[in-house]
Structure formats: structure tokens, C-alpha cells
Image 1 (cartoon, helix red, strand yellow):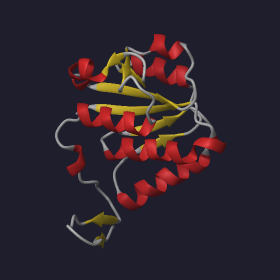
Image 2 (tube, one colour):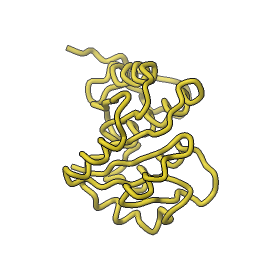
Image 3 (cartoon, one colour):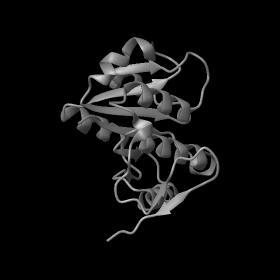
Length: 177
């Protein structure tokens, strides 16, 4: 099974709470096993852990990680690193390579990323060569490299499950042991 983890760089707690939360939610929805936050923001961790608790799955979040150490350890264990940006190789040109990775770390920045990230990454990937949202970059990339159909994935141990319906909202409260 493919392992994907997201490394979030440059999160500014006073400015980026909502967007970083959405980056994490998107990564979880589309198959990442966890998110590493290279900043200290316990509020983001609490929010995402609450979502996992209520909506299921095994998504983990690590707060205040040292990004250089995380990348070094990931690569030492045989993983590859893909930095998403608006600079780099166009995503369609590397999609097959990314899909073939068994262990992939996706790096996404908030503010300007440290220049060394471009050297540490195995791929610097442009998700469109125009300004865009980190959430969009994560969503497009994970959807393109997914095994199967990520939007039909079921999350284990969910307290809540949405039932697809043409109109209205139907949510089932699941009994858990």
C-alpha cells in the first residue's frame, strides 16, 4: 500500500489557521496517512484530531517538527520527496513517477519556502505555473496520483457518516465500541 505524508512549511499561526486546516483536511480525504506541521500550533492539531475522532480514519498530525530532520529520516527510510510549487516540472509530466512511489512525502509551503527545499526535494512540481492555493495543489496532486477512487473511500471507526443524496443532508451516527 502506498504511503503518503504531507509536510506543511511556513505556517503562520496568526494568519494561516484556516488554510492549514484545509490543507490537512484535504490530505486526509484524498489518502495521506498524516500531516507534519513545521510550526507550533496546537489549535490546528486539536481541530484535525477532532475531525479524525468524529469522521474516522487513522490520519495523524505531528506538531512543531524539524522539517530538515523529517525529510532526512523519510529519505533514509527509502521515501521520496515532492515539493509542490508554481515553479518546477509540470505535474502532468511527473504524475506516473509520483504514482509509482511506495513512500512519498509531499511538501507544501505557506510563505516563501526555504531555498534548500528545492535541493532536498526529489521533484519540484508545478501545479500550474500561476499563483494558486496550497489546498488546490494538494487536492489536484493527490487525486492524480491516487490508487483507485479516493473520493469513494470509507473511513473506519467513524462516529458520523454522510449518506450521499441528491438533495438534503443525511448523516448517520454510528455506534462505536
